[in-house]
Image (cartoon, rainbow over all chains, first blue to last red; front, side, top):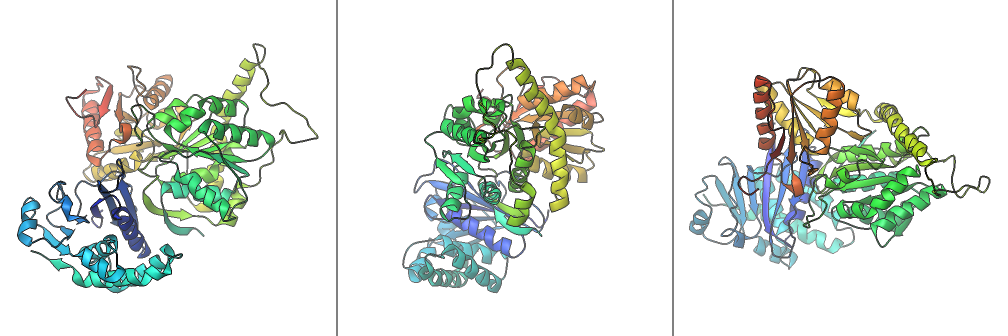
Amino acid sequence: MSNLIEIRWHGRGGQGAKTASLLLADAAFNTGKYIQGFPEYGPERMGAPITAYNRISDEPITIHSNIYEPDYVVVVDDTLLESVPVTNGLKESGAIVINTTKSPEYLKKVLNGYSGEIYTIDARKVSMETLGKYFPNTPMLAAIVKVSNIMDDETFLKDMEGSFKHKFAKKPEVIDGNMKAIEMALKEIKKVN
Amino acid sequence: MSIRERLSGNEAAATAMKQINPDVVAAFPITPSTEIPQYFSTFVANGVVDTEFVAVESEHSAMSACIGAEAAGSRAMTATSANGLSLMWEMIYIASSLRLPIVLSLVNRAVSGPLNIHCDHSDAMGVRDAGWIMLFSENNQEAYDNTLMAHRIAENEKVLLPLMVCQDGFITSHSIENIELEEDSEVKKFVGEYHPKHYLLNDKEPIAVGPLDLQSYLFEHKAQQAEAMKAAKDVILDVAKDFEKWTGRHYGLFEEYMLDDCDLAIVCMNSTAGTTKAVVNELRKNGVKAGLLKIRVYRPFPGEEVAKALENVKAVAVLDKADSLNAVGGALFEDVVSSMYVAGNKVPTVNYVYGIGGRDTTTNDIKSVYNDLAEIAKTGKAENPYRYLGLRKGEN
């Protein structure tokens, strides 16, 4: 399965990394792909480090194990960088996407010499400006779609509008903000190296 | 026409229950099966089903309520995991001996202690001799399909036994994956209505259910249960045939994956079978004749068929996701090797206890088993047949 894309999410309980992985699965599903979206459940507590995973493929996926050699890693909370080995097993041909405002020098230091592509986004700024609250998962979802090139921006935006209408059927007032968060995130993502 | 969807294993099980629309669902929540009654109670609240939902105070009561409902003449379902099933244990035996075709969704999890919420098969293995039909599911699709077939099997007059559909806790229950769903009306047509021959609320035929049964009759009744379990094999295959005609999806007593010309075979159940398939594909590309026998129907155990399917391989590994702590081997291993022995099949066979308490099982783990099998096939010797897979070294 050479077309298989494997993604690992690192976040903290309550930040929506699990939800983001499920939304990514949803978005890829809507473009006709085979998908898996699953969290690694531990003793769940607000603020504790959590991991979630995605597999996306053109062919049926039968593997049922965690992902140890991901193509992409998403870090939803940069305070994890010094305590969780987020680049473990990450393919050099892949990329890591981090929600941070930290300097490139700092990132290179904490990423244990990872030589693949490093992308950053200030998901807090995006979220505060578009949603008025800190929900990093929507901007991070947009960031990983952009970096992994799973689909083009236009397809993704159209797809997410449908997903949000469904997901927020009882809270339609947040749909606009989330769509704006995605649009802004697609522009704000930066390549570090 | 199937509907392309993406659902978790728990959503798949709950969706099947919604489409079946049973008369009664009685359940008590326990991780990782909690979502099933949770989703189902939403269907009830929204009027999508007209099921009587009984929010009981324990799993013992959940099974008791299902027994009462089925004995009265209605169709009853429930869902549980691990210690929930343990608490049902007394009533599990009563359900099967009263020949009540209750359907249970078992989301497999390690039975405590110490406390662990993750997947292994110790819950299912604890009731393997309780007289329930047990179907295992590799993924959300199979959990859905097995549930759709469940009532046709359990309620068949030749069978009349309760049935549990197993799937791996978290690994499939909480993983969103693609699935093909069927139309509500088609499901309704396939599952059909339940018209029991004998039931408590029939005022034209007053009966007693479950009275005293001593030396003079219990043996005969147990033998009838045993015969019903044997008869279930053909019924399961008949229902699978109808199911395939309807959906195009094929099911047998077990799945043979690249087993025809296979030298090295793994036997396992549930989600690990999917991981094994990926390894088989890779090994086949390198010319290794690897194969898989995935058990779907664990009770009744298809002993003759399994022994026959494995008669031409050079080495077999049986993977048990529960340890029987009997100093001999896991339950699936014992079922497979005793079936092989009776059939005169002398293929060297080893056992791996793996995945206990949710220990992740990777493609590398499975590859190491095929490597061991290649060695066994070469020497013809299977030394130390009771082994561990994925156990950390130096801590046992």
